[in-house]
Image 1 (spheres, rainbow, N blue to C red):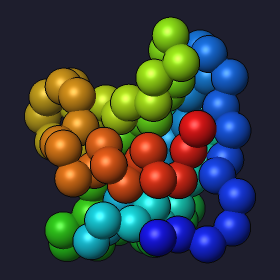
Image 2: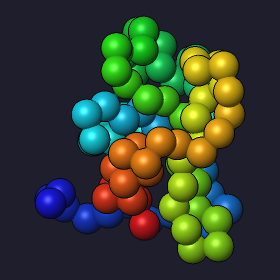
Image 3: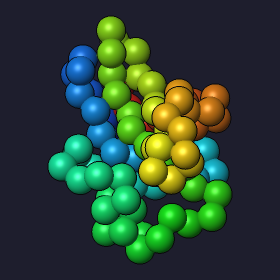
Image 4: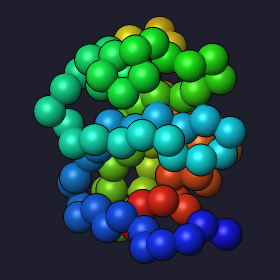
Length: 89
């Protein structure tokens, strides 16, 4: 169980996000590309960290994997999606 309030997104809103070991470690608005977001937050992408975009569409929170870091742009893996839903609403 997480402590504190969830971060509320409105429909159509998206944010950059990093998830490691089932927890959201960093997030930011969409002002930067994924590569610059990671550079500013951690320098390089820590091993085992997922990076992508979290958004809310039709009242559903979902993650999309960063094409820059993973070579494809698909929905986030299930464990990442669960972490996103614990942090965002």
